[in-house]
Length: 143
Image (cartoon, rainbow, N blue to C red):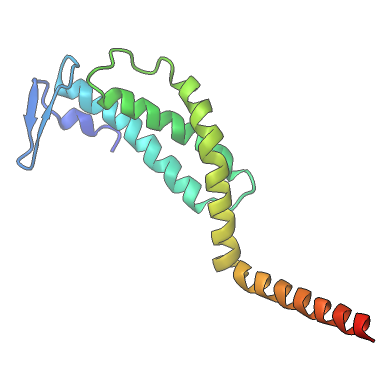
């Protein structure tokens, strides 16, 4: 898969029959596909690893996922002349927002489906205990 770019012609466009791929600002389609695959393959593998990882440190995988995502965006963006230059700054900003959201979502999904803990049922039980406690306090005050 990593050497799939070798099958790509070295011209300005490549008509696959389904769609046409242009050089997108690079010297040839061959180079463009090489750069795309160089970002897509590790990104795909990292996302797969993040989804399937069971270790406590799996959130750290978000750093290279975000970095490769920004690098892929810069390669696909025709207006950008610089590739792999300042994506690290954007990664920090994005991870400050994304990491807590992903952590909470993964925690809730893991609790619900892996451990069988339903937070709504726990809240209902706590409300029931609080109601019974309030009733008991009210009954003691009346006597």
